[in-house]
Length: 233
Image (cartoon, rainbow, N blue to C red; front, top):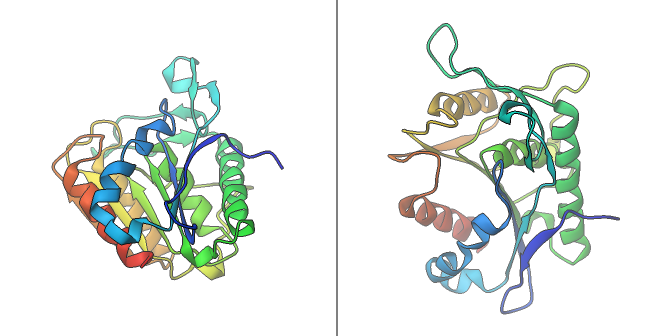
């Protein structure tokens, strides 16, 4: 089995939990790996058994960026600015590539289980484009996961023949949504639409809003740390 290249930060004690955290378009796993020292301070003893995994997306041409190659989980074919109602329009994505990335994340989860981590002790997080993959990866995974977090992201609608086949085992998964009220890249309307779409699919979500742009902030990292502490005690 070939796995995505990733930064792996091993815990100071034997691992009994894992966090898989996906970066955004044009970035790499290094982006969020840099948060681990801060999370260590915030989490205290909860931090000790957690393995952190920050996978790198492959470089592919991205249509909306003039076809230039960059790290991306899938190609974005169109990114309309606004709908007739004045809200940000949904992105048109290469659905085959999105699902291939979802499959890659499933393989990483499978590997953690083969390493002795219970699926109920695995959290999936994703930022921006990585969040879209995280949503689909967690909600279609066939074993119960600890939780799912989408940061400054959206929930892409999959059309036939792809569709969205949810996992019965994760119908009650804890879903946290974090978004900036001033986000110029993924407008907050898309974060709110993701929440509405998930609720319509029968999921329970918790939405967090911050006065920030397309980024993370200290208050948000604190909230994520509290969430991790609650899910991986």
